[in-house]
Length: 412
Ligand code: PLP
Image 1 (tube, rainbow, N blue to C red):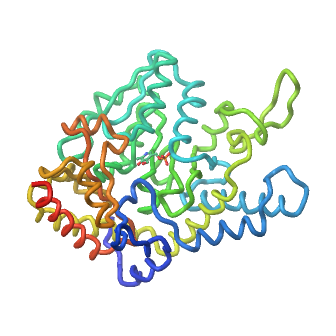
Image 2: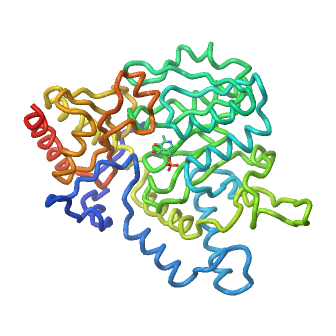
Image 3: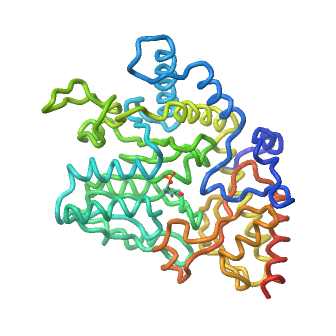
C-alpha cells in the first residue's frame, strides 16, 4: 500500500468527536487499547441513532403510515450506503445481520447446508477467530464434511507454500480472515481468492478486523462472501453485514423463518422474498443499520487509506517502544500488519497484567481472544493484546510503556 499524505488529518481534533475518550478510569485518563474487541462511537453516530428514535422510529416494510415510510427509507438507504462502501454491485447483495458471527453462521448453515456434502473439504486457517471456526465444525459434524487448515508460521504469516497441497479440488469453501485479531497479520486476500477460484472453491473473507481500518472493495478482493460487524468500525453493537455475490445469494435457501422474509404464507407452506430480505426474518436492527451508515460517512470523511497509514505508523511506534520493556515478547512479526499487537511478559500472566493495567486506566485485553487453536500453536494459553484505532495517540503509547515498566517491578 502506498504511503499516504497524513498532514491533512487532524487526529487530535478527531478525538474530540468521541465523548467516551474523556472518561477517567481509576483516577487516570482512559487509554482505550481494546479496539479489536469493539471500537468507540463518535457523536455523529450517536446523534443519528438518537435522531432516528426521536423522529422516525417505527417498524420497517410493514406500515402504511408516515413514520414507517421514513424508517423504511432510511433503513434501505443505509443498505445502499454499505453496498457503495464495500464496492458491491447492488444493495441486494447486502444482508443485515447481528454481526460477523451471525453472517458466518448464515453462510455455514444456509449455503453450506444446501451445497456441501459428505467428503467435501472446508479449508480454514489456524489463525481463525472462533466465529470462523465453530460454525464450520458444526456444519461438518452434521453433513460429514472435512476441515483442513492452512498452518501459521512463527512470524504470524500463513504457510502459503503449503497452499497447493491443501487447496485441492475437494475444497468447496475457503474461509479465512483478512486481518488476524490476535497477531495483526494482514493476509493476501486477492491472491487467496484467486487461488481458490482456480480449484472452483467459494471464498468467505472475515473482514471483522479490516473493514474499518483500510480501503476494501469486494470486487477487487474477488471474494464470494464477506462478513463484518458494525461495532468494530464506530457503529453500534448488534448490526453487521453479510455480503454475497448476487448469483450466490439468490441460490441460497432461507435460513431463519418468520415475518418480513415471506411473500405468502398458508398454514402448510410459505413462499419467500428475493434476497436480501429472504435472510432478514423478523424486525431488524433498524437503528443499528442507520448508525452503521453514519459510521461509514464518518470513516470516509477521514479516509480509509489515511486510517490504515495511521494504524501502520502507530503499530511501528508501539513495537519500537515495547522492545524497551524487559521480558516482553511480541507474538507475530509479519511485515504486513495492522494495529493489533499481542504480547506476553515474563513478569506476569496476561490476566494479571491486564488487571494491573486497568488500575492505571489502560484498557488492554488479556486471554485467548477467541483464538484458542492459535494460542496453542504459539505455546501459550493467552496473551495481552493492545489494539489501536485512529483516535489513539503516541502519548498513550508512552504512558502504556510506563505502566508496563511498572508491572515489571510490581510482579518481581
Ligand atoms: N472475526 C474476527 C477476526 C474478529 O476479530 C471477531 C471479533 O472479535 C469476530 C470475527 C466476531 O465478531 P462479532 O463478535 O462482532 O460477531
